[in-house]
Amino acid sequence: MARLLPPQLFFLLILVVIIHHSYGLKHLKGIALVDEVCRHTSHNEYCVDTIIPKPPVSGERIASTTLGWAQIKALEAGTIIASLLNDSSSILPVAKNPLQAKELLQICWDSNMNTMEDLWIASSLFYNKIINLMIARLYHAANTTRVCQDGLKGTGFTALAAKIEAIIKLCEICVVSTNFFVNGAH
Image 1 (cartoon, rainbow, N blue to C red):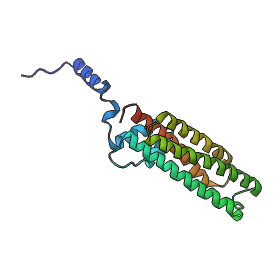
Image 2 (image 1 turned 30 degrees about the vertical axis):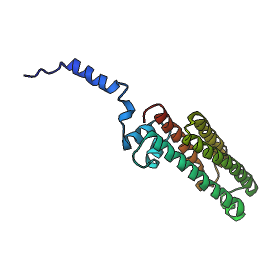
Image 3 (image 1 turned 180 degrees about the horizontal axis):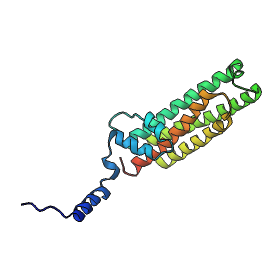
Image 4 (image 1 turned 60 degrees about the vertical axis):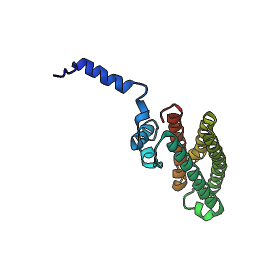
């Protein structure tokens, strides 16, 4: 007859399996990995709803996807800003002071151009596996974007504000997911 392990020994065995360094995040796949990455961000719900990398899902694939989405959102923000700057009548319904609004939009245009440059450089660094500089560029892109975000508070430029907020969130998610694959999780 087979002997069962005492409960304390069984618990210890389970604990060793769970804590063992070779287990950890390496065994997370698909949605479980996305959930784990997103759990480490400030924007968990946004992250889970946004991140849909192509299989096989890995930390690197999540980082690549979020970096691509950040670039797209920056392009979309640039299009909105250019449209607002080129059509003064579109500013009037949302701006109390159209001149101030134009100045704000010019600041947003300049910061968005810097953000796009940072994102494209970050992308190149990512694919060349120069990770520390890539992460620095992502932080810079997010901080540069915050200049516009701060100016937009209390204005009626909601579509632009949503794009700007998305860029900042995606930069953070990209940094977190990059740390997952760099630190050996995937």
